[in-house]
Amino acid sequence: MSRFLQADIDLRALIHNFQFIKSIVKEANQKNKIVAIVKADAYGHGAVEISRTLQKEKVDYLGVAFYEEAVLLRDAGINCPILLLFDREIEGIFKYNLTPVIFDIKHAEKLSRYAKKKNVVFSVHVKVETGMGRLGLYKNICEQVIKIANMPNLKLEGVMSHLSVAEDRDWSLQQINKLKELKNCLKTLRINPIFHIANSAGLFLDKALFDAVRPGLILYGYATNRSLQGITPCMTVKTKILDIRRLPKNTPISYGKTFITKRDSLIGVIPIGYADGYFRRLSNRGFMIVKGKKAPVVGTVCMDLTMIDLTEIQEAKIGDEVIILGSSGEEKITAWDIADWSDTIAYEVLTSLGSKAKRKYIY
Ligand SMILES: *Cc1c(COP(=O)(O)O)cnc(C)c1O
Image 1 (tube, rainbow, N blue to C red):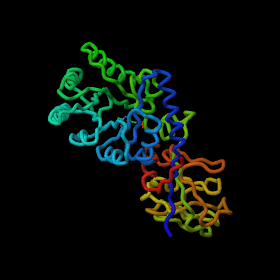
Image 2 (cartoon, helix red, strand yellow):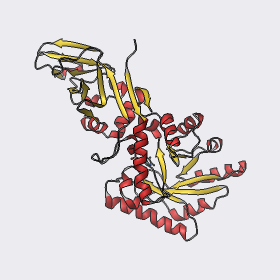
Image 3 (spheres, protein in one colour):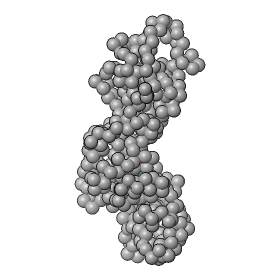
Image 4 (tube, rainbow, N blue to C red):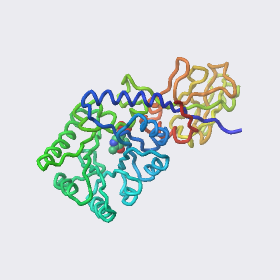
Protein backbone atom coordinates (compact mmCIF):
# COMPACT_ATOMS: atom_id res chain seq x y z
CA MET A 1 0.00 0.00 0.00
CA SER A 2 1.25 3.46 -0.70
CA ARG A 3 0.33 6.75 0.85
CA PHE A 4 -2.10 8.78 -1.24
CA LEU A 5 -1.17 12.44 -1.49
CA GLN A 6 -2.22 13.99 -4.74
CA ALA A 7 -2.09 17.43 -6.30
CA ASP A 8 -4.62 17.79 -9.09
CA ILE A 9 -3.42 20.47 -11.50
CA ASP A 10 -6.20 21.85 -13.65
CA LEU A 11 -4.62 22.97 -16.92
CA ARG A 12 -7.98 24.32 -18.13
CA ALA A 13 -7.85 26.77 -15.23
CA LEU A 14 -4.29 27.69 -16.25
CA ILE A 15 -5.45 28.46 -19.81
CA HIS A 16 -8.35 30.47 -18.42
CA ASN A 17 -6.02 32.51 -16.21
CA PHE A 18 -3.61 33.01 -19.10
CA GLN A 19 -6.45 34.33 -21.27
CA PHE A 20 -7.50 36.60 -18.40
CA ILE A 21 -3.98 38.08 -18.27
CA LYS A 22 -3.96 38.43 -22.04
CA SER A 23 -7.25 40.31 -22.01
CA ILE A 24 -5.86 42.82 -19.50
CA VAL A 25 -2.59 43.53 -21.27
CA LYS A 26 -3.79 43.33 -24.86
CA GLU A 27 -6.52 45.78 -24.07
CA ALA A 28 -3.85 48.27 -23.05
CA ASN A 29 -1.49 47.42 -25.90
CA GLN A 30 -2.05 44.79 -28.56
CA LYS A 31 1.68 44.21 -28.93
CA ASN A 32 2.37 43.69 -25.25
CA LYS A 33 4.27 40.44 -24.67
CA ILE A 34 3.78 37.94 -21.87
CA VAL A 35 6.66 36.35 -19.99
CA ALA A 36 5.04 33.52 -18.02
CA ILE A 37 7.02 32.89 -14.86
CA VAL A 38 7.52 29.16 -14.25
CA LYS A 39 10.35 29.29 -11.70
CA ALA A 40 10.30 27.01 -8.64
CA ASP A 41 8.76 24.19 -10.70
CA ALA A 42 5.98 26.55 -11.82
CA TYR A 43 5.17 27.53 -8.22
CA GLY A 44 4.82 23.84 -7.33
CA HIS A 45 2.56 23.00 -10.28
CA GLY A 46 5.21 21.22 -12.38
CA ALA A 47 7.22 23.38 -14.81
CA VAL A 48 7.20 20.98 -17.77
CA GLU A 49 3.43 20.45 -18.04
CA ILE A 50 2.67 24.09 -17.26
CA SER A 51 5.18 25.29 -19.86
CA ARG A 52 3.91 22.84 -22.48
CA THR A 53 0.39 24.14 -21.99
CA LEU A 54 1.47 27.79 -22.15
CA GLN A 55 3.56 27.13 -25.24
CA LYS A 56 0.47 25.72 -26.95
CA GLU A 57 -1.30 28.93 -25.97
CA LYS A 58 1.50 30.84 -27.75
CA VAL A 59 3.08 32.49 -24.73
CA ASP A 60 5.89 34.84 -25.82
CA TYR A 61 8.48 33.82 -23.22
CA LEU A 62 8.84 31.53 -20.24
CA GLY A 63 10.80 32.84 -17.26
CA VAL A 64 12.88 30.61 -14.97
CA ALA A 65 15.24 31.45 -12.12
CA PHE A 66 18.17 29.12 -12.81
CA TYR A 67 19.92 27.34 -15.64
CA GLU A 68 18.93 23.81 -14.53
CA GLU A 69 15.27 24.77 -14.78
CA ALA A 70 15.76 25.94 -18.36
CA VAL A 71 17.60 22.73 -19.29
CA LEU A 72 14.72 20.68 -17.91
CA LEU A 73 12.30 22.54 -20.17
CA ARG A 74 14.48 22.29 -23.28
CA ASP A 75 15.07 18.56 -22.68
CA ALA A 76 11.29 18.16 -22.49
CA GLY A 77 11.03 19.63 -25.99
CA ILE A 78 9.98 23.15 -25.08
CA ASN A 79 11.36 25.48 -27.70
CA CYS A 80 9.85 28.90 -27.03
CA PRO A 81 12.13 31.71 -25.78
CA ILE A 82 13.24 31.21 -22.17
CA LEU A 83 14.32 34.14 -20.02
CA LEU A 84 16.94 33.13 -17.45
CA LEU A 85 16.31 35.48 -14.52
CA PHE A 86 18.97 34.79 -11.90
CA ASP A 87 21.91 32.97 -13.42
CA ARG A 88 25.44 33.65 -14.69
CA GLU A 89 25.52 30.75 -17.15
CA ILE A 90 27.52 31.32 -20.33
CA GLU A 91 28.02 28.16 -22.41
CA GLY A 92 24.48 26.90 -21.76
CA ILE A 93 23.06 30.09 -23.26
CA PHE A 94 24.50 28.97 -26.57
CA LYS A 95 23.86 25.25 -26.12
CA TYR A 96 20.19 25.64 -25.18
CA ASN A 97 19.36 28.91 -26.92
CA LEU A 98 18.40 30.80 -23.75
CA THR A 99 17.89 34.50 -23.18
CA PRO A 100 19.96 35.65 -20.19
CA VAL A 101 19.07 38.52 -17.90
CA ILE A 102 22.25 40.48 -17.21
CA PHE A 103 22.55 42.13 -13.80
CA ASP A 104 26.31 42.64 -13.78
CA ILE A 105 28.41 44.19 -16.54
CA LYS A 106 31.20 41.62 -16.14
CA HIS A 107 28.72 38.91 -17.04
CA ALA A 108 27.84 40.88 -20.17
CA GLU A 109 31.52 41.07 -21.16
CA LYS A 110 31.93 37.32 -20.75
CA LEU A 111 28.80 36.62 -22.78
CA SER A 112 29.96 38.97 -25.52
CA ARG A 113 33.38 37.31 -25.72
CA TYR A 114 31.87 33.83 -25.81
CA ALA A 115 29.30 34.77 -28.46
CA LYS A 116 32.06 36.28 -30.60
CA LYS A 117 34.13 33.12 -30.29
CA LYS A 118 31.14 31.03 -31.40
CA ASN A 119 30.28 33.55 -34.10
CA VAL A 120 26.69 33.96 -32.86
CA VAL A 121 24.63 36.81 -31.47
CA PHE A 122 23.05 36.46 -28.03
CA SER A 123 19.78 38.26 -27.36
CA VAL A 124 19.96 39.58 -23.82
CA HIS A 125 17.83 41.47 -21.34
CA VAL A 126 19.43 43.80 -18.81
CA LYS A 127 18.08 44.21 -15.31
CA VAL A 128 18.30 47.57 -13.57
CA GLU A 129 17.69 48.68 -9.99
CA THR A 130 14.68 50.90 -9.38
CA GLY A 131 13.84 50.08 -5.76
CA MET A 132 13.76 46.34 -5.23
CA GLY A 133 17.22 46.23 -3.70
CA ARG A 134 18.02 42.78 -4.99
CA LEU A 135 19.66 42.47 -8.42
CA GLY A 136 20.34 44.83 -11.29
CA LEU A 137 22.72 47.52 -12.49
CA TYR A 138 22.63 50.35 -9.97
CA LYS A 139 25.38 52.84 -10.84
CA ASN A 140 25.38 55.08 -13.94
CA ILE A 141 22.63 52.90 -15.23
CA CYS A 142 22.04 54.48 -18.63
CA GLU A 143 25.76 54.57 -19.38
CA GLN A 144 26.17 50.92 -18.45
CA VAL A 145 23.19 49.78 -20.49
CA ILE A 146 24.53 51.65 -23.52
CA LYS A 147 27.85 49.93 -23.02
CA ILE A 148 26.16 46.54 -23.02
CA ALA A 149 24.06 47.46 -26.05
CA ASN A 150 27.26 48.22 -27.94
CA MET A 151 29.14 45.08 -26.96
CA PRO A 152 29.99 42.89 -29.94
CA ASN A 153 27.70 39.90 -30.59
CA LEU A 154 25.10 40.98 -28.02
CA LYS A 155 21.65 42.21 -29.01
CA LEU A 156 19.91 44.22 -26.31
CA GLU A 157 16.42 42.82 -26.63
CA GLY A 158 14.97 43.92 -23.29
CA VAL A 159 15.45 46.05 -20.19
CA MET A 160 13.70 45.09 -17.00
CA SER A 161 13.24 45.93 -13.35
CA HIS A 162 11.09 44.50 -10.56
CA LEU A 163 8.36 46.04 -8.41
CA SER A 164 8.93 45.60 -4.68
CA VAL A 165 5.47 46.63 -3.41
CA ALA A 166 3.17 46.47 -6.41
CA GLU A 167 0.15 47.11 -4.17
CA ASP A 168 1.61 50.51 -3.24
CA ARG A 169 0.71 52.74 -6.15
CA ASP A 170 2.87 55.74 -5.23
CA TRP A 171 5.99 53.71 -4.58
CA SER A 172 5.46 51.70 -7.77
CA LEU A 173 5.09 54.92 -9.78
CA GLN A 174 8.48 56.03 -8.49
CA GLN A 175 9.98 52.74 -9.71
CA ILE A 176 8.14 53.01 -13.03
CA ASN A 177 9.38 56.58 -13.53
CA LYS A 178 12.98 55.52 -13.00
CA LEU A 179 12.55 52.90 -15.71
CA LYS A 180 10.92 55.47 -17.97
CA GLU A 181 13.85 57.85 -17.53
CA LEU A 182 16.13 55.08 -18.66
CA LYS A 183 13.88 54.41 -21.64
CA ASN A 184 14.13 58.07 -22.66
CA CYS A 185 17.87 58.12 -22.16
CA LEU A 186 18.29 55.11 -24.47
CA LYS A 187 15.84 56.49 -26.98
CA THR A 188 18.05 59.51 -27.68
CA LEU A 189 20.66 57.03 -28.92
CA ARG A 190 18.07 55.06 -30.91
CA ILE A 191 18.39 52.07 -28.58
CA ASN A 192 14.85 50.71 -28.29
CA PRO A 193 14.63 47.39 -26.44
CA ILE A 194 11.37 46.18 -24.91
CA PHE A 195 10.83 47.26 -21.30
CA HIS A 196 9.15 45.27 -18.55
CA ILE A 197 8.56 45.64 -14.81
CA ALA A 198 5.10 44.24 -13.98
CA ASN A 199 4.62 41.07 -11.93
CA SER A 200 1.07 39.78 -11.30
CA ALA A 201 0.08 42.68 -9.06
CA GLY A 202 1.64 45.12 -11.52
CA LEU A 203 -0.89 44.06 -14.18
CA PHE A 204 -3.38 46.34 -12.45
CA LEU A 205 -1.17 49.44 -12.68
CA ASP A 206 -1.61 50.51 -16.29
CA LYS A 207 1.61 52.55 -16.25
CA ALA A 208 3.54 49.39 -15.30
CA LEU A 209 2.62 47.47 -18.43
CA PHE A 210 5.34 48.92 -20.75
CA ASP A 211 6.05 46.43 -23.60
CA ALA A 212 5.83 43.15 -21.70
CA VAL A 213 4.61 41.75 -18.36
CA ARG A 214 5.92 38.93 -16.17
CA PRO A 215 3.01 37.29 -14.35
CA GLY A 216 3.62 34.35 -12.02
CA LEU A 217 1.14 33.89 -9.19
CA ILE A 218 -1.91 34.97 -11.15
CA LEU A 219 -1.31 32.26 -13.78
CA TYR A 220 -1.89 29.73 -11.05
CA GLY A 221 -5.16 31.37 -10.02
CA TYR A 222 -4.17 33.58 -7.11
CA ALA A 223 -3.69 37.32 -6.72
CA THR A 224 -2.17 39.44 -4.01
CA ASN A 225 -5.48 41.29 -4.13
CA ARG A 226 -7.46 38.42 -2.67
CA SER A 227 -10.84 39.65 -3.81
CA LEU A 228 -9.85 39.65 -7.48
CA GLN A 229 -12.55 38.01 -9.60
CA GLY A 230 -12.01 36.22 -12.89
CA ILE A 231 -9.18 33.79 -12.10
CA THR A 232 -9.37 30.16 -10.99
CA PRO A 233 -6.91 28.29 -8.74
CA CYS A 234 -5.18 25.45 -10.60
CA MET A 235 -4.15 23.27 -7.67
CA THR A 236 -6.16 20.96 -5.43
CA VAL A 237 -4.28 18.90 -2.83
CA LYS A 238 -5.94 15.86 -1.31
CA THR A 239 -5.27 12.73 0.66
CA LYS A 240 -7.23 10.01 2.49
CA ILE A 241 -7.97 9.40 6.16
CA LEU A 242 -5.41 6.91 7.51
CA ASP A 243 -7.17 6.15 10.78
CA ILE A 244 -10.10 7.27 12.93
CA ARG A 245 -10.14 6.87 16.69
CA ARG A 246 -12.90 7.43 19.23
CA LEU A 247 -11.19 9.04 22.20
CA PRO A 248 -12.61 10.07 25.60
CA LYS A 249 -12.60 13.59 27.02
CA ASN A 250 -9.20 14.71 28.39
CA THR A 251 -7.05 12.73 25.92
CA PRO A 252 -3.86 14.54 24.86
CA ILE A 253 -3.23 14.66 21.09
CA SER A 254 0.24 14.66 19.45
CA TYR A 255 3.67 15.97 20.49
CA GLY A 256 3.80 18.44 23.34
CA LYS A 257 0.21 17.74 24.43
CA THR A 258 -0.80 21.10 22.94
CA PHE A 259 -4.37 19.84 22.48
CA ILE A 260 -6.44 17.92 25.05
CA THR A 261 -9.89 16.70 23.98
CA LYS A 262 -12.61 18.73 25.68
CA ARG A 263 -15.28 16.11 24.98
CA ASP A 264 -15.59 12.54 23.78
CA SER A 265 -14.04 12.99 20.33
CA LEU A 266 -13.66 11.42 16.93
CA ILE A 267 -10.08 12.08 15.83
CA GLY A 268 -8.86 11.51 12.27
CA VAL A 269 -5.21 10.76 11.50
CA ILE A 270 -4.15 12.26 8.16
CA PRO A 271 -1.00 11.11 6.30
CA ILE A 272 0.47 14.54 5.57
CA GLY A 273 2.92 16.48 7.71
CA TYR A 274 5.52 19.19 7.63
CA ALA A 275 7.81 17.01 5.49
CA ASP A 276 5.14 17.39 2.79
CA GLY A 277 5.04 21.14 3.07
CA TYR A 278 2.08 21.14 5.47
CA PHE A 279 3.59 23.73 7.80
CA ARG A 280 4.06 22.95 11.50
CA ARG A 281 2.67 26.45 12.03
CA LEU A 282 -0.74 24.96 11.16
CA SER A 283 -0.77 23.09 14.49
CA ASN A 284 -4.08 23.87 16.23
CA ARG A 285 -4.73 26.53 13.53
CA GLY A 286 -5.40 24.85 10.20
CA PHE A 287 -8.46 23.13 8.75
CA MET A 288 -9.07 20.34 6.24
CA ILE A 289 -12.30 19.39 4.46
CA VAL A 290 -13.93 15.99 4.96
CA LYS A 291 -17.36 15.10 3.54
CA GLY A 292 -17.85 18.73 2.52
CA LYS A 293 -17.28 20.00 6.08
CA LYS A 294 -14.33 21.77 7.68
CA ALA A 295 -12.42 19.84 10.34
CA PRO A 296 -9.88 21.68 12.55
CA VAL A 297 -6.29 20.51 12.96
CA VAL A 298 -5.81 19.43 16.58
CA GLY A 299 -2.43 19.14 18.26
CA THR A 300 0.97 19.57 16.68
CA VAL A 301 1.54 18.80 12.99
CA CYS A 302 4.07 15.91 12.86
CA MET A 303 6.61 15.11 10.16
CA ASP A 304 4.28 12.74 8.25
CA LEU A 305 0.99 12.88 10.14
CA THR A 306 -1.58 15.43 11.29
CA MET A 307 -4.65 14.92 13.47
CA ILE A 308 -8.03 16.56 12.80
CA ASP A 309 -11.19 16.70 14.89
CA LEU A 310 -14.00 14.77 13.20
CA THR A 311 -16.43 14.89 16.12
CA GLU A 312 -18.84 17.04 14.10
CA ILE A 313 -18.43 14.73 11.07
CA GLN A 314 -19.52 11.40 12.56
CA GLU A 315 -20.13 9.90 9.12
CA ALA A 316 -16.39 10.09 8.26
CA LYS A 317 -14.72 6.75 7.53
CA ILE A 318 -11.16 5.48 7.11
CA GLY A 319 -10.13 6.03 3.48
CA ASP A 320 -12.43 9.01 2.96
CA GLU A 321 -11.05 11.84 0.86
CA VAL A 322 -9.52 14.80 2.71
CA ILE A 323 -9.14 18.12 0.91
CA ILE A 324 -6.04 19.97 2.11
CA LEU A 325 -6.26 22.74 -0.51
CA GLY A 326 -9.29 23.20 -2.72
CA SER A 327 -13.04 22.91 -2.41
CA SER A 328 -15.61 20.24 -1.66
CA GLY A 329 -19.33 20.79 -1.27
CA GLU A 330 -19.91 24.25 0.14
CA GLU A 331 -16.48 24.48 1.73
CA LYS A 332 -13.28 25.86 0.29
CA ILE A 333 -9.69 26.21 1.50
CA THR A 334 -7.51 28.53 -0.57
CA ALA A 335 -3.75 29.01 -0.51
CA TRP A 336 -4.43 32.38 1.11
CA ASP A 337 -6.43 30.68 3.90
CA ILE A 338 -3.52 28.36 4.66
CA ALA A 339 -1.16 31.33 4.39
CA ASP A 340 -3.20 33.30 6.94
CA TRP A 341 -3.33 30.36 9.36
CA SER A 342 0.44 30.02 9.15
CA ASP A 343 1.60 33.65 8.84
CA THR A 344 2.95 33.37 5.33
CA ILE A 345 1.89 34.10 1.73
CA ALA A 346 0.08 32.04 -0.92
CA TYR A 347 3.33 31.73 -2.89
CA GLU A 348 4.98 29.74 -0.09
CA VAL A 349 1.91 27.54 0.38
CA LEU A 350 1.80 26.60 -3.32
CA THR A 351 5.53 25.96 -3.69
CA SER A 352 5.58 23.91 -0.47
CA LEU A 353 2.46 21.79 -0.92
CA GLY A 354 2.91 21.33 -4.65
CA SER A 355 6.41 19.93 -4.43
CA LYS A 356 5.80 16.68 -2.54
CA ALA A 357 2.40 15.54 -3.74
CA LYS A 358 2.05 13.23 -6.72
CA ARG A 359 0.70 15.38 -9.54
CA LYS A 360 -2.22 14.52 -11.74
CA TYR A 361 -2.98 16.83 -14.65
CA ILE A 362 -6.50 17.64 -15.74
CA TYR A 363 -6.70 18.59 -19.41
C1 LIG B 1 8.83 35.73 -9.49
C2 LIG B 1 9.01 36.86 -10.39
C3 LIG B 1 7.93 37.39 -11.11
C4 LIG B 1 6.50 36.94 -10.91
O1 LIG B 1 5.97 37.47 -9.74
P1 LIG B 1 4.45 37.20 -9.33
O2 LIG B 1 4.21 38.07 -8.16
O3 LIG B 1 4.36 35.74 -8.99
O4 LIG B 1 3.61 37.54 -10.50
C5 LIG B 1 8.21 38.38 -12.05
N1 LIG B 1 9.47 38.85 -12.23
C6 LIG B 1 10.53 38.38 -11.53
C7 LIG B 1 11.86 38.95 -11.77
C8 LIG B 1 10.33 37.38 -10.57
O5 LIG B 1 11.36 36.96 -9.88
